[in-house]
Image 1 (cartoon, one colour):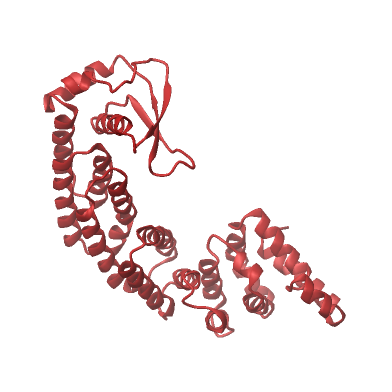
Image 2 (cartoon, one colour):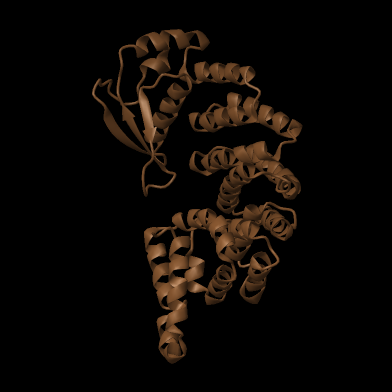
Length: 369
């Protein structure tokens, strides 16, 4: 039980004390490993929290001793005489009791910073087997962010993350193959869930910064955006991501907008596509007057009954924007949708009465009474 008693310079305080550990320092790294192993053993002496602005080399812990931990230590002592031995056997036992891919990946994510090579190897083997047997692309997308977080520990903790990256690479390839089909024929709830997974998947790909993976992902986005039967909110978001990657720009982007927002497209489908495209930010409408004109013209051609039907979806879209963005969009509506310099040149050509009629419509879209 020597490693249970050794506390790496921590004092057993019943009043909480905060520590910020720099993982580049050997002593702080050892402390971190010790606390992570205790957490795996469900001995909650330390509680980890995020450190803003410190990067992945910093960890913040609050330590608060509870006399009841002595009983927990005795119970977990049956798994081994050191924290490494006990945590390894305990994790392997937990892994044998679960069959869900997400649960095993969660255990792997917790085990990497605890420096448990035997347990990690066992978990990676189990993840690989479960991923190979899984035909559910949604399940694979749900675990990718956690696995990417695991791979980041490789550089921080001098841990060999090649095995984890091999699994990530294989899973992303399978996701990219199956995803276009998974985006078709789904209801609104399923589309909303998939939309959130798209965002997390895109973040994970950007974190990895690997050319092959990025190219696979961007090719998949192209298929989804062009898919005629894809859920419109997903197709819209895929188009937005392609625009962010600068793969669709200028006239090509405007054409995609015109196609999705044309009069031939059912208003509900067009509104859902717009919600996906504008997910998270409406800044593109502020800086691109061509896209602004497409949206403005689409709204103008809606009759009152159809506009009333799609208004809730439009309000939900615009309500997700930040207050500064909504304020700027409101100002753009009042100015007729052009910048100040252009406005001065065209001031004499503005039909003030017609412009005034459109203000109420756009303000309702943005959620204002």
